[in-house]
Amino acid sequence: MIGIFDSGVGGLTVAKAIKESMPESKLIYFGDTARVPWGNKSPELVKKYSEEICDFLISKGAKTIVIACNTASAYAYDHLKGKYPQLKIYDAITPVVEKIELENGGMDSVKIAVLGTRGTIGSGTYQRKIAEKVPGAEVIAKACPLFVPLAEEGLADSEIAKSVLDEYLHGIKDRGVDMVVLGCTHYPLMKKGICGFFGEKTRCIGSDEEIARKLKAESAEGLAEASEDEFYFSDLSESYLELAGNIYGRKIKAAKIDLQ
Image 1: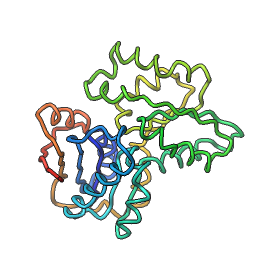
Image 2: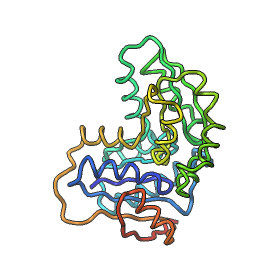
Image 3: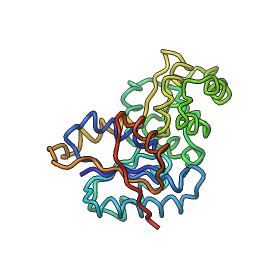
Image 4: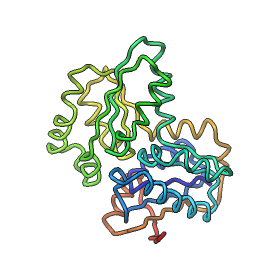
């Protein structure tokens, strides 16, 4: 069983990509909607939340854990790997950096825009890992906190979104970037607008597709399992349930779980 967690509903973009890539796999998803967002939380608190959720997913039978949150990947990935050596743990950042290395194709220089939450960008994890794999890369990191509420409110294609895109990204576009990293699992919901803003010559890379690719390539999961996928949230309302279904691409049944 594959356990997937995020600070909220954005990680469902990852769950959807995994399900499409590995349809026979059993997924258990937890979204910490009661404590969202994590992008402005301290590293220590993100580690604590991540541990609590991992313990819950393990109790439900998960043998593989996917951190479907870039902020948690930046702050808690190494910590969780040390605490749970019995688990296979995948983060949201490493597969993206591997894709960048592959896409770079030996170019001497490449400009990469990394878009994410304040926590992800402030951690410097993307910047450091890209520098290790692609030493000649110029990384332009930009926190775009308003992308999350726009995506959750269904305003990704609105005039408001276009204004926000221009406010955040016009200076980066002028620098002629080669790649754009959608460094938050909510951002695939904004992919059309973000990628369209930069134009077809700029490659867009999202953690949803790259996590699914890496998991399928490396995982022994995928054998047919009788039971349905399970979805849990720390806070649950009709609007959240509707939003979750829209992101996942189908109606889901979910339960509210208080981890505190």
